[in-house]
Length: 204
Image (tube, rainbow, N blue to C red):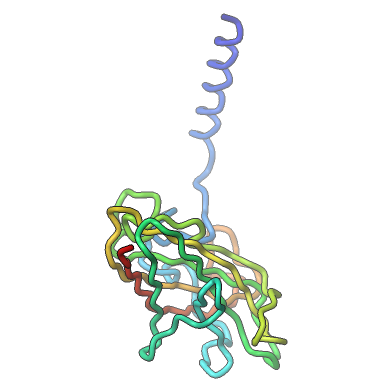
């Protein structure tokens, strides 16, 4: 009985502390998860020096073959067999020789139709995903990109029985500096990048 009373007291204290705590600021992302923002630009300015396509690296690779999933129109297509996992690799950064490369890259795969919903996951409905977002320090290595300033990270998706073809946005920020808590447009240099990603369900 004493143990139960102690747990109740501790629980009540935690509730009071949480109620008195100031509002929290999430980074990343406020896009549909910590808030209902439509894009990263709701909180961040696209004021960085990395907007030129010539030196910018944005790619989605097959996890096994390391080949690009880019289509001729610049979008990406991820095909996955229903019930089976498919791993892809998100590659972001700048080509070697950039005098001021980004220090940290943040990105998010989001289904725009899900941003206003109450679901915690804003990925396409019916698709399981282990890492739809990340914020990572530049410095990863990848064959074929020697000397480039990159972040490279895998993501595994699996279409369940209810999954359907879907269209995602890959929203990314190449950044340097540090944003001010509660005022994310201050103190941070960032270039916003947007790419279309198509999810295709293949039947076994």
